[in-house]
Amino acid sequence: MPTFASVVELTDRDVQNMQELASIWGEIRTEFEEHDTTLKDSYAMLGEHDFLVIFEAPDQDAAYKAALTLHRHGLDAQTMALKNTDDFADLVDEV
Image 1 (cartoon, rainbow, N blue to C red):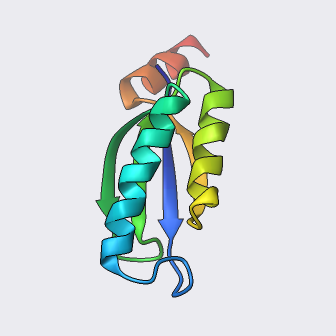
Image 2: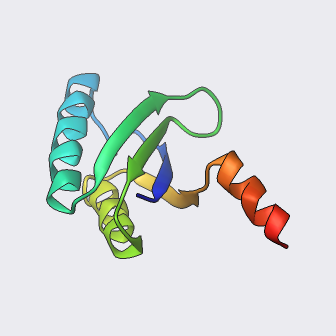
């Protein structure tokens, strides 16, 4: 199943407190599952972005739905497709 990542930035208006954030992650996981998408990992980050969310989706439409789920919960996210480096190397060898 294709893998996707979303980098998330929080602003003061996005999440009022850490307890609310924990609740949001549970809701997001449930909504992802409703779109046949699996939340694989999430990480807090230092730097330009606050969180990294990694998920698997059966196709691009499901990935769009997952990205919209993040936005619906007030999270400013940029979502992108990922490719395993071994699979990428195979593509390079084919060119």
